[in-house]
Length: 82
Image 1 (spheres, rainbow, N blue to C red):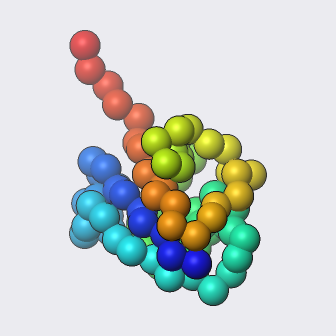
Image 2: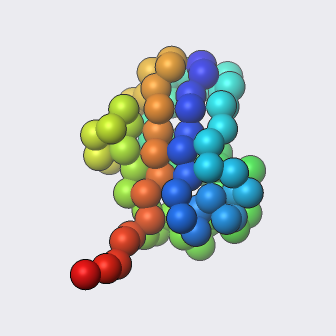
């Protein structure tokens, strides 16, 4: 299964990229399983993921959401501002 993963703000700093194409053998995969996979790949992400929202194809989703081949998943950290 091929996924596009987008990283924003501090998450891009941790992964050293703002976008990557992932090829995962496990299908179907949930957002929670993807989060676990990314924490193994990027050890610094595990501290951040408690505060991150996930969006799949531009819609917020839960950890239980099942991903499909070709999905785009964005990891969105909290934003402050005014």
